[in-house]
Length: 177
Image 1 (tube, rainbow, N blue to C red):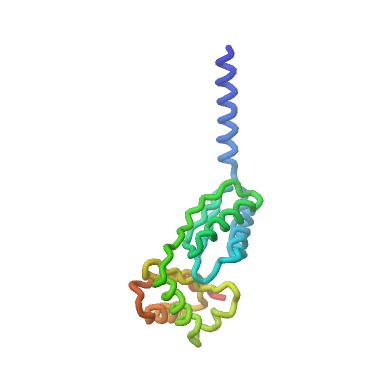
Image 2: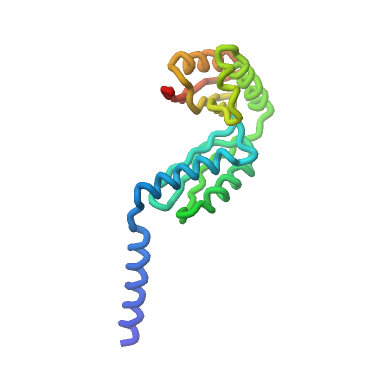
């Protein structure tokens, strides 16, 4: 009899856990969490143009992805998101880029080539730069947003003009303002 009660209690507990894990998330809650995740990432003190962090919301779980140059930024991003109301779990898949003087030099030259070019100076104005420059082992990935297909192509041309780069992947998205 005692074993039956114990197993019944275990089954009730597991059922409660499964029900909690499968409870539906209202669309407004998911949108609010996603908006707050974006805000918290952008407010990180060491987040700069050479970092790219994105977050996806699935239920009450937030998955962080992207690349950062500073190892503490990975930890800071997780801590910031962990404290958002409604977030129950954070999966941190942010990659810390390896330290490299060669890549650091490429980052500086790419920044000048893109943000210092007259036709693209408008993107240098905001504090949070819309074009993210990710460099890993001489390979460049451009992330973020631009106003037009022309600007996207111009950024690509400017990035490819920097010497010492092995490849450029242009993931910029065009947003019509």
